[in-house]
Figure (spheres, rainbow, N blue to C red):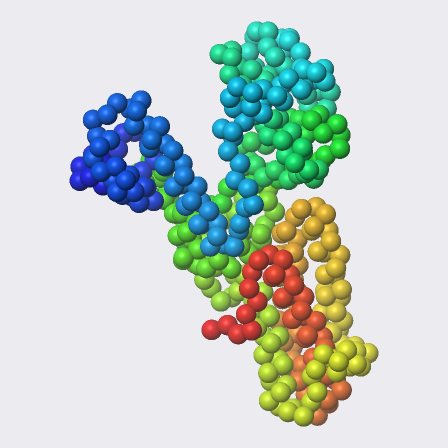
Length: 399
């Protein structure tokens, strides 16, 4: 804000500067001019905080929208706090159910957890619901613990009708899994379940070397920067092309390559190739009926070569793969599978260059061509469906 007004200032240590804050300062200048200068922090900070939080949330929404990610609800934890608010009512409800008591926690063995204090505390009976220790709900200063807010939020969510919950946490919060599951089990009476997905950090790379960033110096790469550099398709596919609990190196150079080392290109290229097969068939065999009904009537028993069988077997795994991915909440299974199908299809294509009998289009054998087109059509459909599930486009041609 002061820089927007023309001042040259030094950023104090411990703060996180960056170009993304410049529009916020300009907006404050436009709204208040220089009227905030000279006023005490107690008066200025609440004004700035409210507007900065709103601006940052809008920035997050805009970045996510570039990836076609839209949240139905953004929930503010602040709404849980205050006299008579959700935490108060939740704690009262827990007391009524006998899930809270006053007691002391035994000193933990080994490393002392952050929430352990040697004093009488208000404790949630987490061990009754599968946790390894009962959890404090009130701090020594009388304020609520983070976990108290977690319980209140998940009770609110359950009361809104959600019985199957998925929480996505960073790897540094893996210790929260058991207590969160215990909370959901308690507030729902065992009627709701929770799946917690622990995600590792993404490390940005350039040409195989880590891209060094520093929040304190303002040397940052935002999600919007990454999308602008490589495109939304590449970001979405690469983020699903790994297990959520596996660390990921996101190399800008690799996701721009047109090779099999770039998974999103490899899969999209397979779809584009499948589309090109139909275009070639129309060009080389203009009288061949390639309508959906004709493909359904094709004699698929002619597809008897090892390459045919390999591709058919790969395609046959699609229903099982997508079902397992949905049940396990693991979209990477779809991404892995699409890469495998793409590999089988590209391999078949390469064999056709050496063996005329393995070409997809053979003007001297219309029946086999039609059968192969039915197979290619199945490949194309599976790739379209799979990429669609991941929110990635399936272009008919690649430049």
